[in-house]
Length: 182
Image (tube, rainbow, N blue to C red; front, side, top):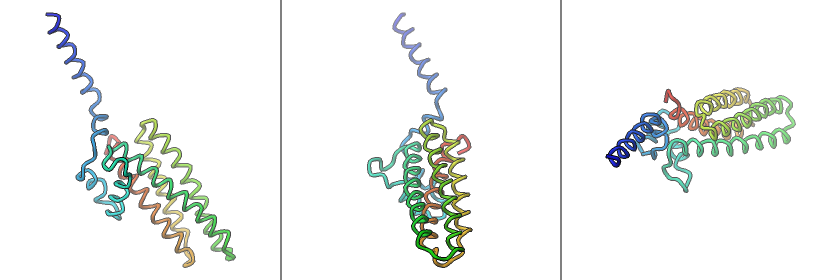
């Protein structure tokens, strides 16, 4: 009788864990090609999204939490490189109006870098709703920078800004899949 009671207790415990943690279990399932398609199919640049999500050679198809981390890291690198580009472009221009546009973008990108740090902290804490919200806020600043650029001479910054937009759109789509509404 004692072994059957132990078995019953063990089964009850396992069932309780499965009932309590179903959403966490979904987040740790390896990502399939179908999941990648679901994440990227409405992205403005589908191939960019898929390539970015598959870019980590140590984890070709990690779970959704891992994909979110990959997305944060790629977006972080791109945003910091763009901030460096803005600083360089601003120091080289003699046109005060163009310098003013670069300065606007510099401020936007400082905000972006700050929000990335917040998203990293939220990711580490398992707060994927906040990661999603921060990604949306970052996209707002990114579009604001794009809107501020009116000079043809700003084309290199426009290209870098578009790349950052693509990375953060990817992050937004991946992090959305981890939220309760995802």
